[in-house]
Image (cartoon, rainbow, N blue to C red):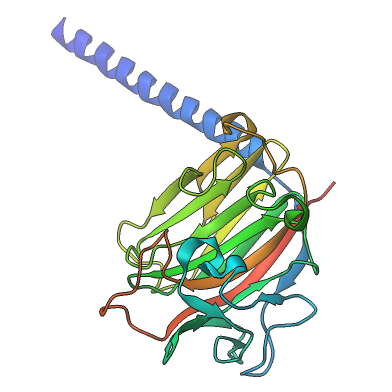
Length: 279
């Protein structure tokens, strides 16, 4: 009797495992079907060209100076943004280098954008890049609503595909800002490496965005989904957005450089790509 009872327990255990695996497989398959897209490339830059060249002027323009109102772009940042090759240039090996420097008068860096040249509503937006690091260093790959000149921020909306506090080189953040959820009260989530740092290798940072949600990825791992129903205010992500790459120095989000912050600091960008869902 004991032997029969043991066999029955074993059979029940095996059946339970099979059922659990089948259930998990269905869940995974359903999830993949729900989010599967046939993406079509519509815009890209692989930053080819001779070393020392500025990025393609047909694709990128610049923010210059220390920001509207001279308040460090609204964040108390310390850098002056320039369009000089020492702050932004092609390396000759297929990369864009954005360099933050300590100067005799403070700090300089670069912030490039596609405003007025390219914007898109919905799709997949991705960049493969390696971040800088150190206290007070703030690299970002992000987007702003094309209507910012008429409605201002945060009504225009902001999508931070990747930003990093340099003092935490193992953790990146994906965030959205809009009316009622901006500044120090955005909708955000972090993603951390268990055994690594984002400044020591290249990673692909991406969002997939449609009329109902925005998904955030690192190397195609989905770590955050923000749905329209999650937003405690107006959903303003229903218009074209343009792209931005920059490295800030200091500011409310990261604090300020210390004596331990090494300079120069470089963000190395392999490529930027934008896709739309094919019909």
